[in-house]
Length: 397
Image (cartoon, rainbow, N blue to C red; front, top):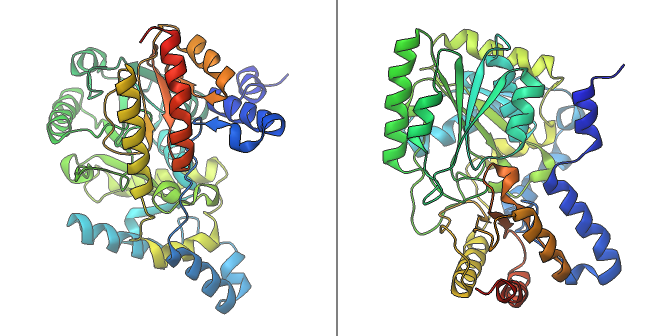
């Protein structure tokens, strides 16, 4: 007998992946240039030149056992130190190598945190809609805890505090935030962060145990219009930061990221050890060695995000002028408009006749919306606008 829950997960990919694979099959028929695939958050801008130079230099000058061999489970000390120094320079913190655990991307970071913090099947982790769908998989199937979804505040996609407070209870082990947000592109405001921190502090004291804040930050550097993304950890002492260089350095397939455990976390030593133990239990022997070396040199670098900003402007202005309703994204590379009909699955299915590949918002916890991933070539965005307009006219927008 197999684990039936895990079997079901293996037999059905996520909706995002299903749509992405549909696009791959359609491309064989109509040509890749005729597929308008806005399904997956796969960065299309090149990595910075510094990354390419680092890769070549490391491979050409370092011994193969250093480049391709096992590293310490928590990561190469020089790499962790470089990341800590980059954070300290930007945010005025005082981190060092001992605060960091390197991972195979943000998915590993997040799943490690859930596993490390879960002590009982009664433990609950709260997520705010809209949210990355795999959170639920990591919480329920990876850690064996409960996932509590807070309904969205759709007018601005800030935190719905009324519903949040109703769901806080002594079983709450952690709260997950993602800002800039996938799929809305919204950045949590200073006011939201301050209110969240105050509430978690009060409830931690009331319940007699810390409520951990897990901050998922792979889009931290992808921001527009001079917006500042609050760095969460100094605002709330029991914060664990999960990060990936997939987006900021355009390296999604290389799987390199980290968990940051600040010194301020209650029982810091035990929490950091639990992170290490969770990585061991989940089979994460070490993060990819080559890219640990790359990050040592490139921790402070960022890919050219101006293309994403241009795509956002074209798409947001174009769709809203057609009658689509959308909160303007301040970061990341997603648009999350309302669908012209309540059934977002039906709308996204109808869009396929134009080879427009969009993801239903229901998968992110908000029905009646669609996610449009605009990390594509700008000409793809421009060529897609007439197709969105045809759809809009079908609904009388």
